[in-house]
Amino acid sequence: MTGELVPFPFAVPGMTATEARAAVDRYLAAPADERDTRIGEYQLANPETLLALCHRLDADLESRPNEVHAAAAAAY
Figure 1 (cartoon, one colour):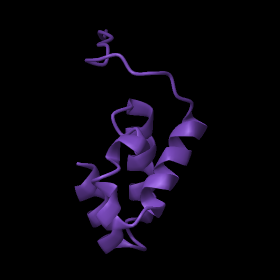
Figure 2 (tube, helix red, strand yellow):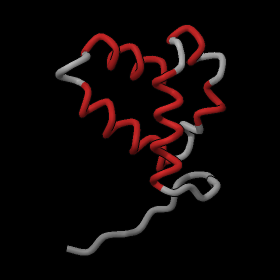
Figure 3 (cartoon, one colour):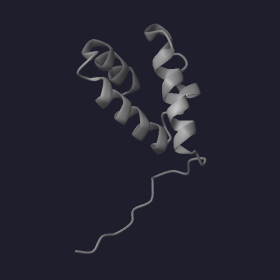
Figure 4 (cartoon, one colour):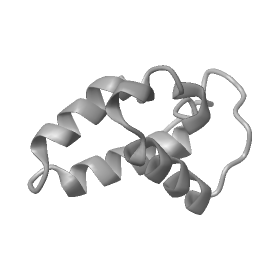
């Protein structure tokens, strides 16, 4: 099976996985009512950050389902 590499629909600045995890940590550490107003700070438009957020939310789902739901809803 062959595949086609499809570029992300818009240019994003480079970000390492470590920087993405740090952005996710800042996002999740912020009070829930501030996440929407400061969404640009967390670089959630970056695919690396979205991947890190998905991994983190998946890891936390069983232990903190209400917090994961709130964080995922705000990020969406």
